Length: 93
Image (cartoon, rainbow, N blue to C red; front, top):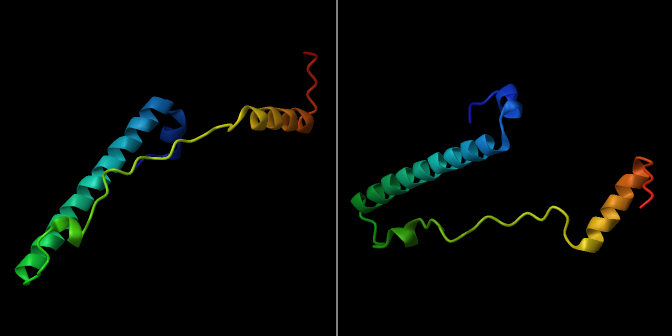
């Protein structure tokens, strides 16, 4: 991305998110460019496949996996208990 560590750590989560989005959009554009160049070279060289997606498919349907920060409520409670025990925190709730 071309950021220094300082720029990364001093940025807001929103600006980091949008910088990542821009970076991945740029990479996606480069992939499409190389795909088209390869396809043109293949066809000029006498390639028999007539569908670019069979030649080099780009799966647009893939969505990023959702990230679970805690999982179930039981896992959340267990994790909080372990953290409290590790740091010797006692709450009278």
